[in-house]
Length: 207
Ligand code: GAR
Image (cartoon, rainbow, N blue to C red):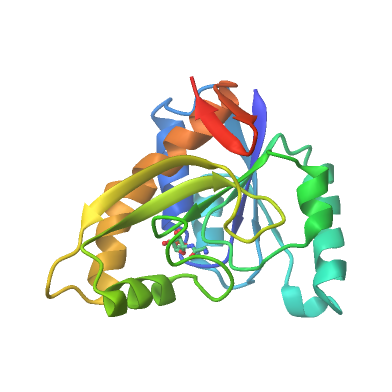
């Protein structure tokens, strides 16, 4: 069984989707063994505790800079014997030492169709504000490997939703979460744990 460590910063609905999928037996070959939050008051921590999952908190501002924070995170992930690291609404960009320690062993869910509306500054509701400002007619979410390039790693799964004329960032976010994120993130995690994802020449392939 692979040890899955989930990184969170907020409400944790994607973490909940993973917990529920694991309970239903849909995460084949892995189990969530630890949840690490960048915020001490993240509701995601309650969700983990309610599910009996070990939690840790690593607060960004307790460290001098992103290198020191990344080092602490790398050490925590190593202590937890992480086979897979899942960014589930984790809002801190870790530096290259973490990516090097866990090459193609970290996956992120991003609430847009990468390469649109991604990279530094595009997180949470800001992503949906930008998509609506552009007037896109479809949006969605992407599950991808984490590499040194922010939101630039190989794409594993993507899914779409239609954008309505009267959408607000909140309604669009909710539709994308319900229809795409909460389904594709557990699916990608299971595919990883079943060793069904390979990366070749910068592209991810699911068999
Ligand atoms: C989700 O929509 C996730 O895709 C997004 O933040 C939300 C977290 O919600 N992540 C990013 O924007 C990362 N760039 P959650 O805490 O309820 O899972």
